[in-house]
Length: 198
Length: 187
Image (cartoon, rainbow over all chains, first blue to last red; front, side):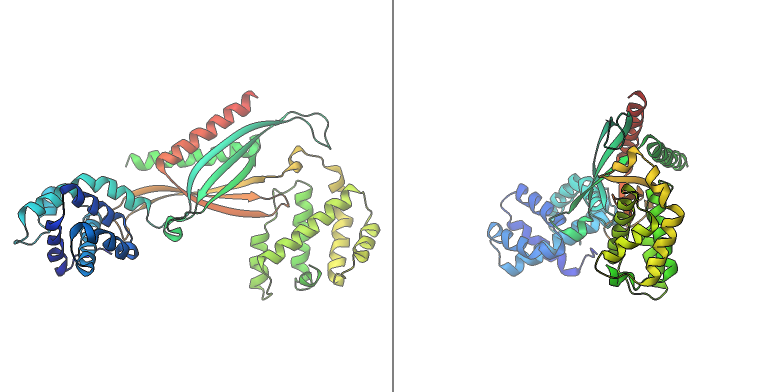
């Protein structure tokens, strides 16, 4: 969990060596999105651009990761709240730049955090088709409408890392079973409205 | 499969055969292998769900083939005996009894639904929840819908599949189903 440590702000000042504001912006985004385990490689990639040692790059990347994640965790949305996090003697311009970058990205980052939290497998796609069964080896003529549904379900992203496993579930529904399903879904919708009105 | 059948106590074996026959008769939508397996395990018998599923599959095939060929109880028992591997006596007894009572009914029922090569929808359970907080966001208030679909595969065995949807996804889900229902009406 993102807790800000004392050394973090000192490390952040290494950003003063960054070639441009865009470089800082990009690094902030990469540091937020990167899981803790991938920070090492990220630091190695950032090294040359900053002209610092590997160790300093690691400290910086870790500090940026902690800062951005901390802001998202606390749900800070106002400039004042973010500015307060910095110690008194922190470089003014850098502080303002970082605050600006964070504010620009905060809602995207919040969505990213929500999307990557632990959950059951998620529905990613739904396809369907209505068929009519006209005959079979046991019944010569019939006209039975039937529904074929394919659900694409993605396993928990946190468990799969970069290779999410998507499984397809194909289900057949008759008119009766479809009505059962609709009834259930209707009740969910009613509950949602009831909760929304509270 | 015969040696695994040996492990199953007679009353559970009878229950399994009952479910299989009732499913073939279209009286129940599917066979609750998972639930039955859990009860068998709780009673102290060490059998995996995979083994039980194979046994259910084999029995289902046995009964449906027997129905298609209009086998009498004696003919069925003879076929079992000539199969090579010997079934335990109590299993044969159960099969004999179940076939005597309900074998005829299996031959008679013809249904478009029995051609299933895809899973058959059995039931849906749902839950509406709100995630309050997580390690990434202290104050989330993120609503979501969890759905568990019970689906019977081609051998009739029921498995559960659970997944989550966001609220917009759920609304789309509902809309798609209403669409399907209206197409089914007009077709």
